[in-house]
Amino acid sequence: MDLGGRRVTVVGLARSGAAAAELLIREHAIVSVTDRKPEAELFEWTARFAPGAVRWWLGGRPDDAFRDVELIVLSPGVPAAIAPLAEARSRGIPIWSEIELAARHLDVPMVAITGSNGKSTTAALVGAMFRQAGRQTFVGGNFGVPLSEATRPGSAWGEVVVEVSSFQLETVDTFRPRVAALLNVTPDHMDRYPNPAAYAAAKFRIFERQGIEDAAVLNADDPVCQDPAFVSALRARRIEFSRLKPPLSDGVWVDGGTIVYRLGERRGEICAVERIRIGGIHNLENALAASAVALLRGVEPPVIARTLAEFQGLEHRLEFVRELRGVAYINDSKGTNVGAVQKSLEGFSRPVILIAGGVDKGADFAALRPVVRRRVKKAVLIGQARPQLHRALEGVTTIAEANGLEEAVRVAAESAMPGDVVLLSPACASFDLFKNFEDRGGQFKAIVKGLS
Image (cartoon, rainbow, N blue to C red):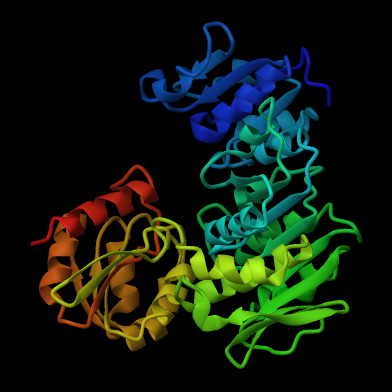
C-alpha cells in the first residue's frame, strides 16, 4: 500500500504508537492518533510531534477517529476485537499491527521470535551473536525499541531481530520472517483469549506467511510446539531445539553436557553447557533456540560459543540484585505468567522465598503447586490476585500476605536464612501497583538495596 495521502488512524499511543505515527508521517500519510488516556498523561509522546503533524483524539475513542479512514494501525495493548475495530473491519478497512506496518518498509532479512516466556532474552542473545559476528544489527519489537524505528532514514541494517507478542501477531498480514522461532506456549493472557488454543493459534501466526525457503525453529520439548493441529500447516523448513530429547534430525540439543547441532550435512559442537553465563533451565532453552537461529543465519559455532560465555542477560529476568547476610535477592519481575515462574523456580536448588502477585490474567495458579511444594519455603503475596494465589498455594507452602512490595520484601528478609533466595517472580501483570513490570522490578531493586 502506498501510504502517501492515505488517511490512517493509529490506535494507542505510547512507544509503538508514536513510532508508527512517525513512520506514517515520513510516508506522507494523513495521520490521526486516538488513545483512551487524556492528553495530560500522554505529553511524553505528543511532544515528539510538530504542531499540526497529527490529529489527536485523546481521552477516549470517538467514532470520528475511525470515520473515512483507509488504514488502522494498532498498538499491542489494544484488543483487536473492540467495537470500533470490529465495525471498521466489517467495512473492509485493513487493520495492521505496528509490526506489520514496519515490516512492509524493511528490505532486510528478518528474524522473529515469539513464545510465552524467554522471547526478550532470546532476541537479545541472537542480536548479540550477530554483532559478535560483525553484523550491523537492529534488535527490538515487543521490547525495547519498536520495529518502526528500524525504518528511519539512513539506517543500514545487516540483520533485524524482532520480538513479537501474540497481540502483535493477531493483526499481521504479509509479515514473513526469514527465520521464525516459537520458544514455548504456556497459558497466558486468558483475560484476552477465550481458551489456550486461541492463544496458541495467535503465536503460530508467526509462521503463517513463511515459504519453503524460510526456517521455523520450534521447541521439541514443548507439547504445544509439537501439536500436529498447528505444526502440520508449516511450509518452512522445520528446525528443533531440545534439552531433553537427543538426538534431533535437524536442530540443536544437549548431549552429555555439550550443546551440539545438526543442520543438514553440517554437524558439530558449540560449547559445554557450563560455559553459558546466564543460569537456569529456561535460559538453557533460550541459548539452544538462539544458537539454532544464529546457525541458520550463517554465524559460526565459535562466535556463538563466545557470545554464550559473555552474554549477561536482561534486566528484570532472573537478575541478581545483591546478597545480604547469605541471602540472595533476585529480580524476576518479567515473570508475568505461571509458566515463567515454574521455569524460574525449577532453576534453584536453594530454598526460595517467593514474592508473587499483581493483576490476574486468567491464569490457573494451581499449576504452580508442584514446583512450589518442591522449591518454595514461603510465599509472600501482594496485589489484586492475593486471594486467588492464596487459595491455589494453600497447603503446599507457608503463606504470608503484604500490602505492598516494600512490606513484602521486609517480610521475606525477616523470614530468610543464610543460603536462601528471595525471588520476585509475580506470575501476574503489574498494573495494579506499578506502571509496568520495569517499574515493579526497579522498585524491588531499590528496596532491596536499601536493606541494612
